[in-house]
Image (cartoon, rainbow, N blue to C red):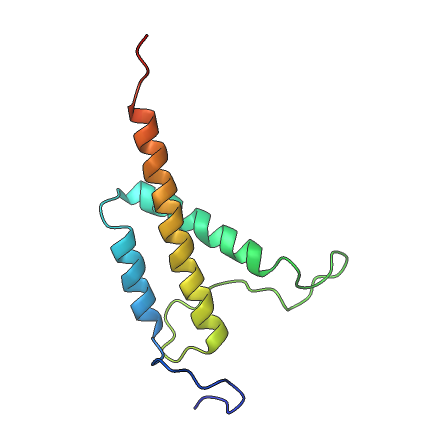
Length: 110
């Protein structure tokens, strides 16, 4: 059951499996090592951005997000937004990686 406080959305909610399939589609065509490095970089960056203004420097608080909801079937709005941001950051990271890889292939001949 969803809370009555959450806003009514005009589109149906998606499960975490939908976002996993989206990431698989984005990473298709890369080697395992490239996939691993991109996923590691994106997850680390996303958790850093989510936890930027949570808690204080002196005292460790429990407000920090420690992991993303990978296998939940019933996502709330914030978890769905986190997974959507993850897939967007993944898309941008793969695009940057491919452009950097393409740039390294070209060699200036004098």
